[in-house]
Image (cartoon, rainbow, N blue to C red; front, side, top):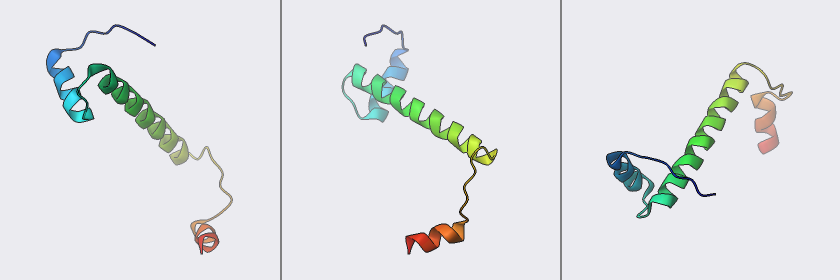
Length: 67
């Protein structure tokens, strides 16, 4: 999907450098994908810490299965 956004030139140059890209569109796309991935991981971690998932196995049980 195409969109138009305004970015500060200095920020855009830094983004290109950090993303290892020479073109703006791939750099912005990578940055957005990375942001979404990190945000979802943070939310998942919060849900884990708050006990929203019930895992019946202990760490010891899981290590036995890996052996």
